[in-house]
Image (cartoon, rainbow, N blue to C red; front, side):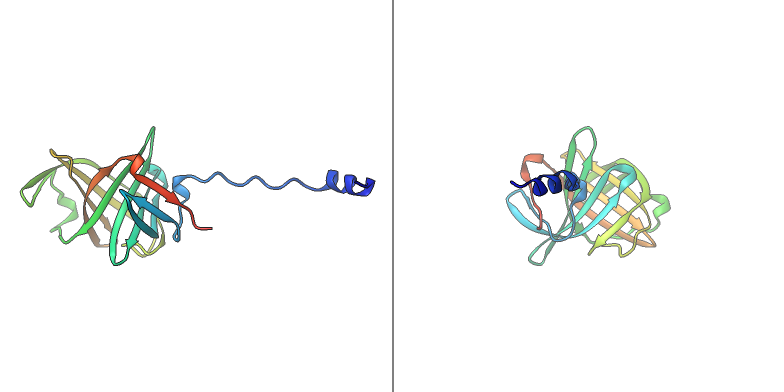
Amino acid sequence: MSLFKRIKNIMKSPEPVKPEKSLLTLAPGDMIEVSLVMYELIGKTSMHSRNEIVLTLRDGKTIRYLKIENRESTYYKLYTPIDGRLDSINEIPTTIEMDNIEYHMEEQYNGRVVVTGKTPFAVSDEQYVWEFQSDNRKLLRIEWQDGRTMMYEGETILSADVQIIRAT
């Protein structure tokens, strides 16, 4: 190696450190396997104040939603949209009976969300969320934003059942 190459290598700036990839940095185009079903990530709703994201997943024509909460552990919940309506978001009951299953309110919160890609809500704005759980561990989620209500039924997913394949 010549003297000039050595000096050039000393003067060359080091490569920038690549940011660490986490679950919260997933983006449309990534692939996610949930319970042995492969989905394409087509949208993402992030609520940074709660360190959680809701991913819009597509498998053919089937749309599902994967909620990822990054707390002391990482929690996964897989939801399917359901038809339903509310008379008023100001009077959300603490118990809801649906299809002979009684759901009890587990959590109610609101915060600013940031949306990317194809999601139920087209713009980033304040979102209100109510989460319910039944005695047999079924989940119900209600979201309200800008006058639009979305309802979902779901279940908790083990972290071992979720595999991520990032787009290149």
